[in-house]
Image (cartoon, rainbow, N blue to C red; front, side, top):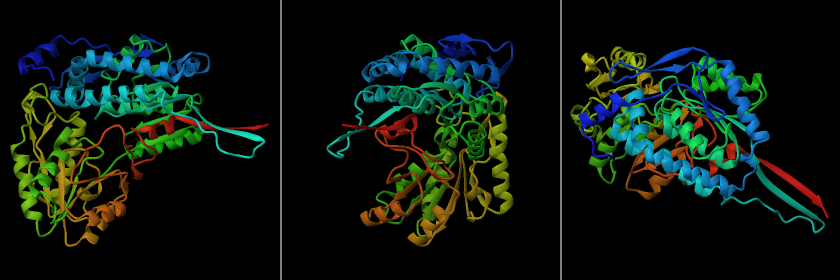
Length: 496
């Protein structure tokens, strides 16, 4: 992390130059004059006018990706050569890390310390990891009859459309783009209209690093227009999406209405975090529960928004979480001392506060927060919020809020905890705190979630896959398993 003061980050922000042009076929392109405003949730200021892509721009991007896949060098390079290009991209991302972090902070409110130390670290590590993996994959030659030779090979799937959200605009783009490129695919990336600027920079950096023209294209635009055009496009072979469950359903419809492209979805969550009385360290469990829901302003699909606590320790744990919520420093995301920055925008702030109002109306007890703060800055700031006395049927306990709002539910035994944890349409992640090894194994197996953290939360690295069950989606990001989304398995049988 650069040793910069608040004033120094402010100075950098004033001199930051950002372009909102699409990156198509290796060059920046405007959108015929159509633009939309990129507004900073930090202070309501317009950062830039961004090219507003529609069907024509998506067509151009897909055509470039199609040419690059069908006739270009990228899918035909030796895997080691593709890997070296990904490593060069990682090096250039590291060189421009501060500028990228600053752009993320300005456009979606993430504290600059998190943008630099967490978001950019994840992006850079992702390109390095897949760059190093690219030439480590092997095909198969199964033992068959003595007069035949069987080969099972993995081939690049083709043109990949990647649609990513605003909460981790670079991390989640990297999780899709890097393995797709490592597999030999070409990519059209559509960032969220709430974070349109930061994803353009890696596109330009990739071209600078030697990625051939058309291999990575970045198109901005509104989801119902540009996103829909990408989902319906007949020349897109794979669509990878992270975002809401409602929009994920739309992409499945788009695939059915076009070319039956494969659609991989990482969707919403209402993740449970279970604390049993034998947790090895209750203070750590409570502190981690608070960190998990307030980190990134709760704008995470894996956020442990349902804290399930045994009734014998519920008040003790809740008081510790409330104390942390009250002391958390909410402020300017360009201030290195800030612990929680702005929500992504006014519309999202209104939705979060609507949930708070609904919780009060339904009879839950507000223990901390719930109010808008720093309104004089014109930014979208809200207090860290904690509810207890929450009934499992309340909206607070069922609907994804995607904000710094924690609901506490008490239980009396492990079976009840598992029932409460699984009583959701989602299945992305879960947490469990216990000292008993058998309980850890049994409960982890019983939880219907793609990831279960035991005595920790949000831990892991690129060696392990990430994804959900139920209406939290399908397929996996991260690890070698991600390559399954971007490759086709071919069998070749040779009669000798």
